[in-house]
Image 1: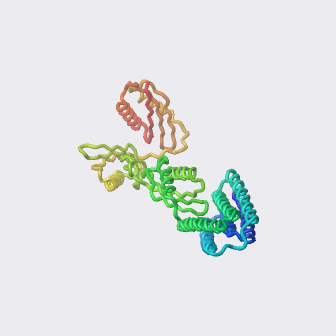
Image 2: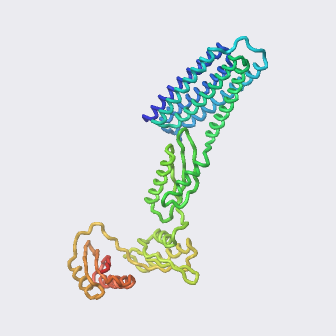
Image 3: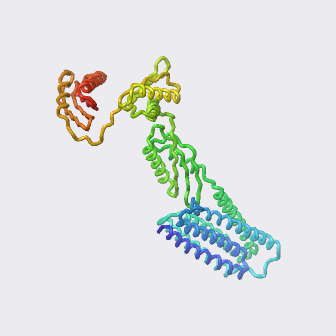
Length: 452
């Protein structure tokens, strides 16, 4: 808010300065009969109009969007620029006509002199003052409106120098110099006004630089975890650039992760385009997603499936096969559990027709309570007796058994020979788990093997 206030103060000073130059040039031009100076005063008026528009835009930028202007009020700047450009174009055409008419007429009785030069020098001083003021302000507080006014101050300085050159030529006897300078300035004003009209008209039609869109797309696709960028819709309203960006992320990405990726894309764009307002839409895609992840996502979202693990796909004779473990409520009967597995199989083959056959291993699902705080020493002794029967176990580490109602959570640390294959270790741990479950009902077991 404070920055916007500072910008409006700078633009107010710039407006007063250039408007005073317009008045001085107009009055001194009329008194000295200098068409070149009068034409340049119209250029100063153009600059005043532009500065006024920028001032209004800076003030309106403080006003938040409302129900009727959901993108804010920045378009008022473009509309004012269009109207000002049309008005200056018509005035410039009049001065071109007047210059041509005077060149064809007899020499005037009054020629520009000292008054015209004084008026021009005053405007040059004003332009230099504005250039210094705006340059220092841009360095401190920045802002598109200040930059635009800075460029206009430079153009006004150039046109005033052309006008003074014409006046000097008249002073040294080249009587048509003033009218030729006015003709040149009239052409310059036509070019500037047409450029202003074109630019503001384009802004009102929501034109945006293709290079800017390309830049946003590159930033988006370079962001980690973004698979691709879809539609990118952009528009400018005043100093703010609005962008609606659609990104594609892996179909197995969680909602929280998707939101995190979206925030990352938004942050990266704003780091490169500071005056931007970004909206991110994310869509799931299975492109380049591993087949196992696709199967996991399909199975996990079937009603009745509590958990999925050990998803494995393999090829044989050019055909793809899949194996997975599906956990269902341990209280349901085999018939109900088998129907769930049939639905899982149907959905996988429906969405992934390249899979020839699906093998599903049904397992009971045991929910582990979050707060388990009762140890079971009897169970720990039974587990030690089982572990001691295995010569492959070189060392028995911690055995933690936590009892909660009818569920026993057992965590076991044990060491095996470091040269034993992982396949053999898995076979042994599975066998040990089976034996423990036979001894201890409703046990949830985790065995952590370590090398020794």
